[in-house]
Image 1 (cartoon, helix red, strand yellow):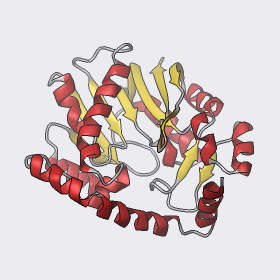
Image 2 (spheres, rainbow, N blue to C red; image 1 turned 90 degrees about the vertical axis):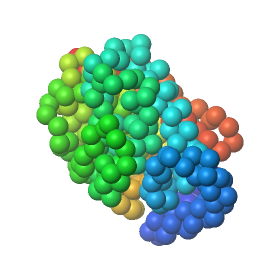
Image 3 (cartoon, rainbow, N blue to C red; image 1 turned 135 degrees about the vertical axis):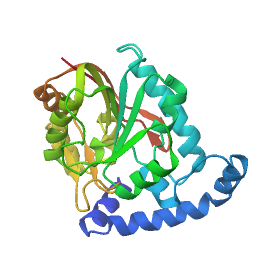
Length: 269
């Protein structure tokens, strides 16, 4: 609890980004040898600049590339019971430096069309230059996406809602509904009940009253902007947008340093 309260003080003083930048340099130093060995062992793999990797996940090339492959296979396994996986259009909403979408063509084949979109233009410039066989585009922090309605059969957004304001939770639920095809499936992850231990006492009280918790004394969309979602809130927002809830998989503590996020699988009626 002391650590939680200390981090709350840092956020309230507006020092989150400074603290996060310090963490980046510490992790870059800590992982330097492992990352050097990864590059030596995989000379043909395009790797993003270090801070671009850190912004999207961790500054760990093994976790970026091989972890991205594992997550892509996991996402495919979640989609498989609910939709065919051939001759479809797939969107990675908030793709970052293509950690997951770069693996999808190898996993699902060339009969599909693959798309990635992100609000960071530098990230999309890198993806467009280095990752082939995927169409990348830049979006804004707020809707709309640069796609027509009823476009995508499968959409996934890994830890995107976790960095958006309450207003944008609602706005993006409607936008994802717009671009999803009829009978399209949307898979999203959120900070759910398993993250209660990360909240302050006052935040827990608000969360248990079914209010989303916003740690917003920083730039929206950045990794230091955090949102925690009571499941009832997610249900109300996405059902109001027109989706039906196909499945909710609560997150849990996996080991001492990792808590998994809630998984939501939604169907466009």
